[in-house]
Image 1 (cartoon, one colour):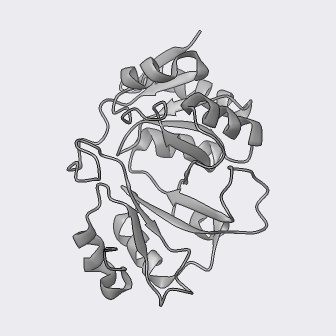
Image 2 (image 1 turned 180 degrees about the vertical axis):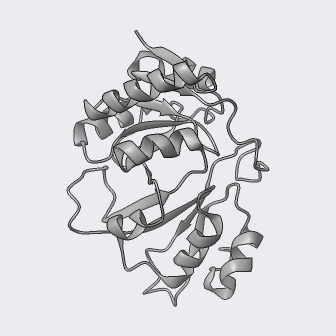
Image 3 (image 1 turned 45 degrees about the vertical axis):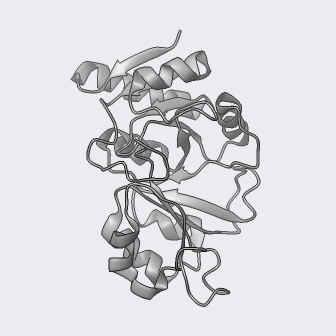
Amino acid sequence: MTRIYDCSVDEERSTGMRLARSAIGRGALVVIPTDTVYGVAADAFNPEAVQRLLDAKGRDRTSPPPVLIPGIPTLDALAQDVPEPVRALVAEFWPGGLTVVLTAQPSLVWDLGDTRGTVALRMPRNQVALDLLAETGPLAVSSANTSGLPSAIDVIGAEEMLGVSVAVYLDGGVAGLDYEPIGDRAGDTSSTIVDATGFDTNGGKLVIVRNGVISRAAIEAVIGDALAPVAE
């Protein structure tokens, strides 16, 4: 039976975190709060668990999930050739609502889907998520919704869409309240995604591929003309 654990109550948080760790360890799915939206999480290094995540959302392998990490040092463990402008953005906006797409370390033994050798990384600014990540390591985490529907910003919305496909739901209250919903969709508090995979071939530019809670102006204030202009 799927259970929701209120992380504002110490005893429920302790039980929920223990069961979430166990679920991740056996390849099951867990819904977690982040600072932007709720996410559905799986062990990034368990291909069956990642496929279970994609199936729960109704997505195929052409939509690989991002990976949430517990700290900035993990960036170099999972990505190679990290450009200096990315390091500047990470120093400014992590933990927080910025996802960076980089070339994955070729030595990694994982299967996130059809990534074409890339990985999307983010360090969230939510203590429940960070505490779980500190114990599990990197997690494949996609927004807690079924494909085509808005991202859940509370645990009830996530449970209504994902139901028994998820083993444990961690309730951290309403997500995204610290951000202005300035993304591509009205009311959306998803992270901003910046792609750095073309940095060495496009004249040293980072490209915003999804507008989210970190504004273009804020990114430009940090990296200046290393940010590619808006495509016409």
